[in-house]
Image 1: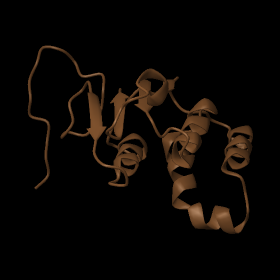
Image 2 (image 1 turned 90 degrees about the vertical axis):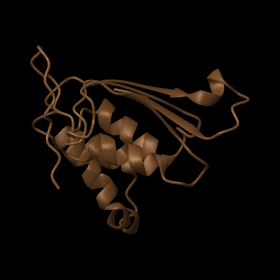
Image 3 (image 1 turned 60 degrees about the vertical axis):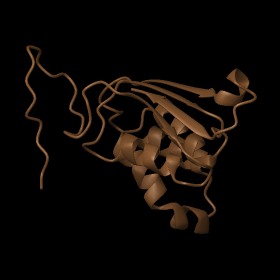
Image 4 (image 1 turned 135 degrees about the horizontal axis):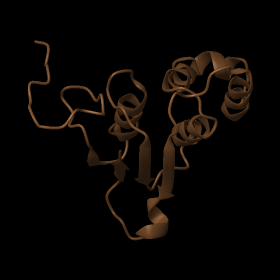
Length: 143
């Protein structure tokens, strides 16, 4: 069954999130280590048609992971979401060619004629510096 947005309010929608998601979203992704929090977040952020955002705040205690470094560098270089997703989809080829993801992103940005359509404000904050005794693995996003 296809889900359609059949809600009604007096404001014209300025966000084009997936119909299953609200127009404005703040959320926590909480689960044990290794359960797929990062995979879920990357899919929500990079898959076309899921989230329409211009401000993104990511708080987590594992922001040292390569996935977050690639995401952050891609956003800093103003690459479109599709191009960042393409880097993840070509993971094996990039490793075989022994290309650094940072260098690849820099080269893509240098050769990119059109930057991301909208200016994106992104904040990545390491959760451990804020709550060093945090026991659960938590990822907080604000869009």
